[in-house]
Amino acid sequence: MAPVIEVTRDSLVSRRDEILSRLELTESEFWEMKATRTLSSEEWEAKEELEEIDFLLGEPK
Amino acid sequence: MGEETLGEKSAAFAQELDDTIRGVLPGQFQIVSVAFEGRYVVRPAGASVREQRVPLFVGGEHLADFGVQIYLGLDSSGKYLKAWKSNLAVHSVLDRTPLVRQEFDAQMTTSPMAHWHIHADRGALSHLLARAHELRADVVRKPHDISSLHFPVGGERFRPCVEDFLEFLVRECGVDHQEQWEATLVEGRRQWRRRQFRSTVRDLQDEAADVLEKHGWKLTPPDGDRAEGQGVLNRW
Image (cartoon, rainbow over all chains, first blue to last red; front, side, top):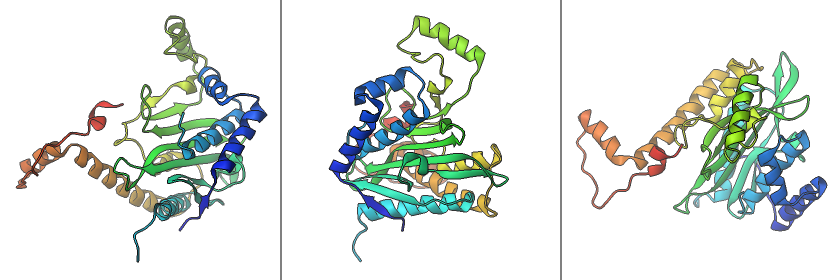
């Protein structure tokens, strides 16, 4: 069986804060930016990670 | 032996995905299930997003990466895991941005649940989108970006599976593959389509019964009202 990696709420929230702080954006600013302009490679990776975190936290955008 | 936990089910699903990809593509990767409170994201392991990829080779040269994430959570019965969302993508190794993406999101409302994004340029299409943006900016928000379009592909039940995407990579993009890749894909696709077919029959029982009766089956409907699964008929 493939490995299951258990994560915590604290680690998810802290990772989300870290990503958004690096981009100097709030989460709503990030999704608005995604809706209106082309993303850079770093922003694509941030999007992938933020989607995963939001889903795991039960807060899909 | 007790009933399989949700975590174990997600691990079994992750292993199935690992076996399928490993049966088709060469390269090093490990599919894992990342878990939090009954929700799971099944994807390649890696400390950073750029490491959470399956390498794609052409003639032994690493030219692109395959990204796959499948989001699992409880279905409406609260007993079984369901794929709520999936992202399949090819990323360039030159700038790490996506080249093509095939996505599914069961909670999509305005855009099609299952769709392709093509990251490409085409002047004539950009011209159309730019004109439309002038008139309907709320509909066409990124006229300069063809990858913002969602090309619809069959809704929840009739969408392509991972095996279809992998076959696209081998047959259309010419990526390196394992010797027995076709057998792996055929087996995986058969399982996927049987599962989707059974779900469709559950959604449209009277339709299924009508077809079976026309083929000589004798069926007795259950008591009570039956509701059709409207999503399978109406949602794009």
